Amino acid sequence: MPEPTTRDHGVGLELSGLTKRYGAATVLDGVDLSVAPGEFMTLLGPSGSGKTTTLNMIAGFVEPDAGQIHMGDTPLVGLPAHKRDIGVVFQHYALFPHMRVDANVAFPLRQRRVPKAEAARTVSEMLDVVGLGHLARRYPRELSGGQQQRVALARALVFRPRLLLLDEPLGALDKRLRETLQMEIKRIHREVGVTFVFVTHDQEEALVLSDRIAVFNEGRIEQVGTAQDLYERPRTLFAAEFLGDSNVLRGRVRSADGGVVELDCDGLAVTAPGTAAVGGTAAVVLRPERVTVLDADAQPPAGHNHLDGIVDDVVYLGGRRRLLVGCPGRTMLVDEMAPRRGLTPGEPVRLCWAAVAGTVVAGDPAPATPEPTRAVAV
Ligand SMILES: Nc1ncnc2c1ncn2[C@@H]1O[C@H](COP(=O)(O)OP(=O)(O)OP(=O)(O)O)[C@@H](O)[C@H]1O
Ligand SMILES: [Mg+2]
Image (cartoon, rainbow, N blue to C red; front, side):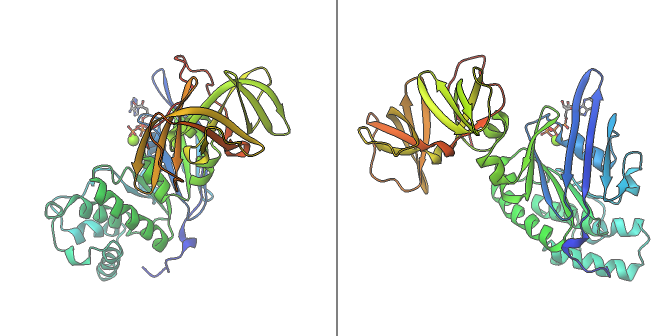
């Protein structure tokens, strides 16, 4: 197409107060989200949290009960899907089986009555972008899953939409292929400059791809931020546990002063940055790599929290070593990037961490079944 491909091509997207009910169930409950032009935004959350519903509303396949959607200055609610000019890629490739690859990709251009010669040129360029120029004459059944998904990407981008929606596009592929295509999608996003809204329930995928991530939970957005924001400064327990492993220290708030909270966690004093109501309960999230292992009788540095325990298990995970340390009332996860020395189960150790290494989070600080420390699989 004549237009140059630059990052300026992407359009901003604004969701405000999006709400959807099915019968008595509220599946989206006032979702607000701003996506910047050209941004790669990922909607991340567990099954049933409302990711696809949100995407379907942007695409125009589902109408909200309340709320607004703007693409640039254009209000979308009420506008038929085919007038929105948004590219869409689903988990299942949805290619036309009786059409060759080039005809599949040309389809949106035919619908838009683009002259044949120009369409052929554009299709060939787009197939090159997704690395499939040599397979233009094949039928979908003659392609692997990953190749079919590249065709679907090419078809969704060929009419140069300013926004592309992708709903678990790699969900049906095996891990290796998924990782390869993640890199491809990242490159294509850079190359075409279109705004991407990408849905996944795979946190690693979200971390690899996104400029920012919106964490969904039960029809609401818990937090929006860069991978680093979400990992280092989760605002809720849900966001903390959905992204990465954590130690969660729950306790009663003894003091909260100048942005520093002191908790009494069953006799263990823990300080961390944040805010909380004195006398109430709160939780501190501490990532495993922020904890240091000292000899059992070592003096922790000033201003550090510390906790004594016994090594329960030592696991080698490639470049790092994970320790499970049994402490009074809890098991602590500790990741060591450069282990100082060999440690064996049964050995007493002292754990310490800087007060600033933890974060006070909102959320249910007292679970129904007392379980002071929880690990969530990566
Ligand atoms: N047409 C419908 N009728 C009734 N309930 C629906 C309908 N579509 C979605 N839901 C419900 O809305 C909730 C959110 O569904 P949605 O498909 O948005 O979840 P999701 O986050 O995409 O989940 P997944 O990761 O499993 O794809 C679910 O509880 C689902 O059962
Ligand atoms: Mg879904």
